[in-house]
Image 1 (tube, rainbow, N blue to C red):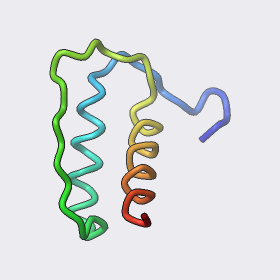
Image 2 (cartoon, rainbow, N blue to C red; image 1 turned 90 degrees about the horizontal axis):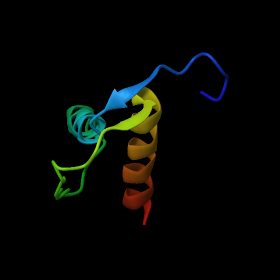
Image 3 (tube, rainbow, N blue to C red; image 1 turned 90 degrees about the vertical axis):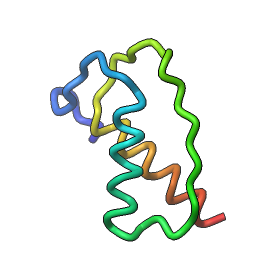
Length: 67
């Protein structure tokens, strides 16, 4: 994950990876809690690696469930 050259950074809407992780967590039965989202559609694009963002969001969900 941290090696140079493996990440594929691009300009993207940050809401996309959030929605993908939420969908994946429901499909895999990871999310046993109720999740309420209020995504801002007016955010500027970010230059980032989609997979890395997904990992960050998934880790955040998992950490919240442990609380």
